[in-house]
Length: 102
Image: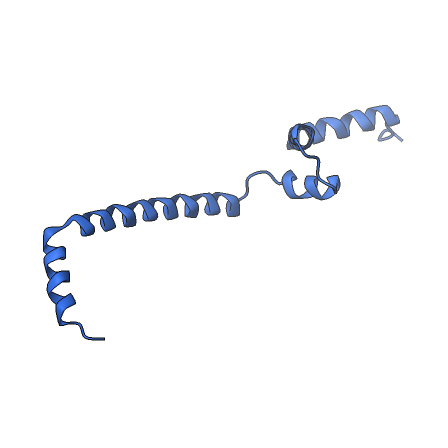
């Protein structure tokens, strides 16, 4: 029975395992986040489930896509402004507008 360890020793070994794996840090972060929420969620356990994973690949992809969308919107607005102020567009639009019959 050389493998027998007192319960405190097993508990300490397990705690060290959790610390090495980053579990303690992740739990601490999500609990601090919950504590700092101005309006506490109705289901704290669900909040922990949703926020325990931290940043995932999907989160990174969503942030990247949001950034790309904002850049595209800015470029569209820039091009619309150029188009609206372009003398060639105004002339072309005016000429074609007179040809248009509803």
